[in-house]
Image (cartoon, rainbow, N blue to C red; front, side):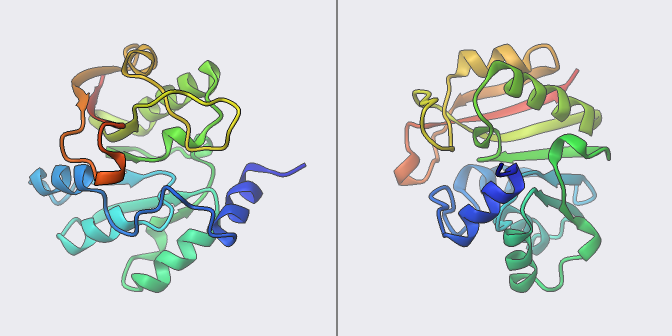
Length: 196
């Protein structure tokens, strides 16, 4: 039986990574550009090639951590950004991670799980656990019809996502993205959620 790690490693090796845009996405970039505190402890789970992490590093953020269940994209990231501290590159299962962060950035991670209510609630609960007091979850979620028969990335709706987040977070904003890249225009929601 193929494990989750094998599944994602195979997709990276086969270059079956349609979600990869080769740069930090505009909504995440513009959110990062508004952050003043360069000492935030930041986690990017399901980071893939880590374009958000390299952008943060370039802009003076000191405590950036990227995580992926597959070592493949993490190796590629380290080759691209050799100055990034090895201790902050985490090859692990998100649900087994136990540190605390001030900010967690979401970009095509939520949509990678089989879209069952159990998986999506587990995601919200784990995000809450990993955030320090007053911590925030911020980023982009796909806003399109859910195809449960295909491969990830999976979609969903604002109402559905809120049903998972509301027990754990205060919603600061959760609206249609106005600055998505052209292929994703009208298909993304940008959200900022504060830990309850």
